[in-house]
Amino acid sequence: MLRMSTLFLRTLREDPADAEVPSHRLLVRAGYVRRIAPGVFSWLPLGYLVYRNVENIIREQMDRAGFQEVHFPSLLPREPYELTGRWTEYGDTLFRLQDRRNGDYLLGPTHEEMFTLLVKGEYSSYKDLPLVIYQIQTKFRDEARPRAGILRGREVVMTVSYSFDVDEAGLEK
Image 1 (cartoon, rainbow, N blue to C red):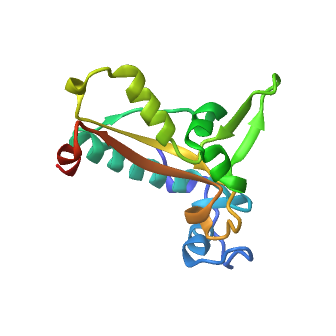
Image 2 (cartoon, rainbow, N blue to C red):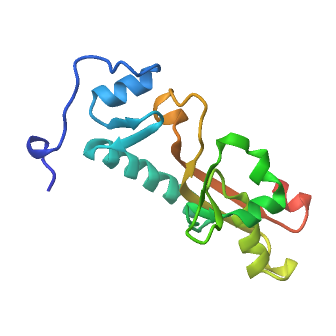
């Protein structure tokens, strides 16, 4: 059982010098997060408890609406992003890396390509539609000014959903 007396929690009396937005100042001062680098944060126990609760509320609502959850990796191959042109379109905001065999990868800034490839690979008939799938996943972007706390970080968690339907009328519904 978690008790406040044993909780790993340290609050601060002063605003952090690097905090430019009120939410960032409050989260740091209240002991929810700590900055590791510009736009990169560690979640402390109290903050991570809230983080998980928010994630669970979102998941419950998505599931209740009939959406199905999938989970893609954060480390993604270059090819799907090359096909859509976004390997170059994203420019300097992509975190790119190579493996030991010089294969190109990126840390996912978004997963549209993965959702589309998944459905294309699994479904072969319009009769399988409609389909609505979602993901709660970490996204990575090399923000030019990662100074808005957790809202404009280099590593953020997003909930995204994609619907696949036969026609525009189905999508509208």
